[in-house]
Image (tube, rainbow, N blue to C red; front, side, top):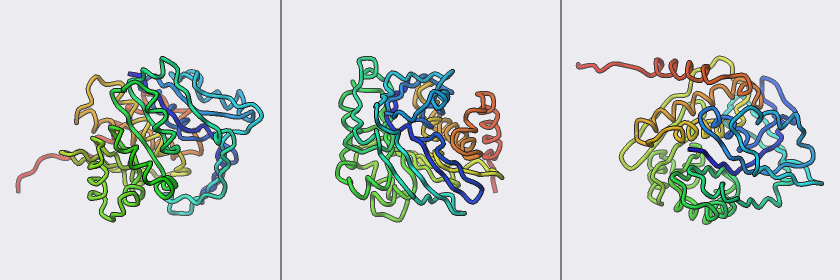
Amino acid sequence: MSILVVGTVAFDSIKTPFGKAERCLGGSATYFSVAASFFTAVDLIAVIGDDFTDEDMSIFRGRRINLDGLQHVHGAKTFFWAGEYGFDLNVAKTRDTQLNAFAEFHPRLNERQRNAEVLFLANIHPELQMDVLHQAKRPQLVALDTMNLWIDTKHEALENAFRQVDMVVINEAETRQFMREPNLVKAARGILALGPRTIVIKRGEYGAMMITKDVVFAAPAYPLENVFDPTGAGDTFAGGFLGYLASRREHNDREMRRAIIFGSVLASFTVEKFSLDRLREITLADIQERYRDFRALTHFEDCEV
């Protein structure tokens, strides 16, 4: 199954304790589509400005990413974000946000896009997410991400969005923030009560957790000695997770667990360099090798005491 993703293609300026990168490629739809394309075909819907060059476009070439929905707004610049991390790489401080071309972004799906089997609504305005969902004919799977800005300013619209999707992919702090509940499992159960069948919680350096009505599954993060830039790791995780799922005939518990690990594997590559530089280098063989390492990392035998 192919995936339709609606989100941002952007430029980022990032500073961490280990270095900095100026106006490097970023955006939720960029990270997601590159990660997902290792497993399946992706339709990308986003907007760019005049400053997005042919060289910038090279990240999408040679991959199963259709760019028919990538709108070019003449006379405008591409979305820009500047952020800084301290030694706690789970927390980013936003220094600057410039919506630019994205400020007037109103995605319109063509007939092929309306028939998407898997739809991922990246962390854009919840009303924009719902506009896209209502244009689509009912996909087999709809997943949604969000961010703290929308939880603070568009809580009611976001709650309405949660009620209309199959899966919420959200980070740990946002899960607690949305439900105003410090206990992570209780907060996740509260979101499930709104209607989604599954919530997948991104926990940064602590891994990921999947919760359904009947199942709780937790996976650690892959242990790395060198972490340079966590920007885009969550979107990469979502791309690996949903990309793998879309490549499977069934979306049962076994495949969902595997998808969590593949998402974690892709995210572990992303943080090893700035921007998408590491994702440019890896192959499916590298992903499969790290998946096997992950399995060995978490394997243990039954024991009677």
